[in-house]
Image: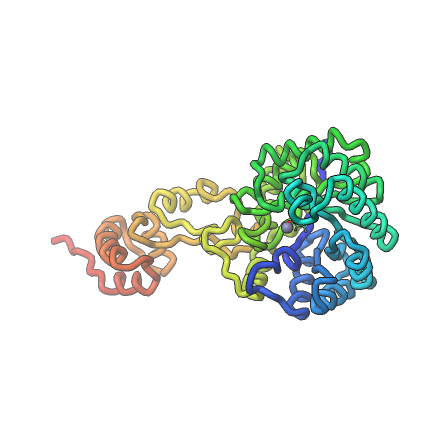
Length: 389
Ligand code: KIV
Ligand code: ZN
């Protein structure tokens, strides 16, 4: 069976930019959009054009410069929003309008104060209206993670009939467990008569730390688009991390039978660019792009890694553009890591020398969190090998 493509829909510039305090200006957004296109994302959600003149301008300017990726603008299921989005996207080679409405009873009652029937009517009307303006319309069923399944199926069937090319099933509140989210996608595949006419999209939030697992469960169940952000940034606990889903799909390509078009060696540079531009540091232990993702600090791991890197690394740092692996010398490090570092620094010590130096190294290491090369030069230069008489 041929491997199937997962479309990567990047929403760093829209959902990602909703992070408090991380507002980007148009110039920064254009720079990031070009970096995302170069990374190989299929769709760039550039903003929410009606939300502010600045966002409108960003979507319009990004539409002018992006040539390969689809450029998408978000709207509510409101005619004016959709008209403004179409206007902002008018220069895009591949424009997409992303419109939608709440689908859970909690949203229907408290946000819209209306009925399920009215939601279906508004959704169909907005989708049809958008489809008359652009050929590619994605519909989002907000809070689908907590929506009643038969109702969700009816809503999705209606919007596909109205012209939706992509149907987004957001777990807006990050509520679902992976098997539940996967079952939701499978249910829609089996119970929506016209589902083969649209691509199903996963849009998962990370409130319980499950956004990546949920997105992968969705893809296993048949979704073919994943919505994500660089470094997993976004509202509250964030969105699905682009770098995580991409590397999971790459690492498990043969069992998942899926692939993406992302150039993975560009993941770390783009992660750094987003982090610097948004002034949002990446946590050191972040999967794939954290500064410790390829750092080994305990003696047992260092010994194994130095013998054969695959003992403790399931992917190479080069594959994700991370520069290289690091051996961090701490009080937990062993003799083999110390000997290896002395050798790299140009010293030739035998086993006995290393035994003596290791004792001295541990004294320094107990005082400092990390023993640096300068500390090792001091140890090496003051070392007096014992002479045998
Ligand atoms: O989380 C969500 O439901 C969203 C929609 C607007 C797609 O971001
Ligand atoms: Zn979202």
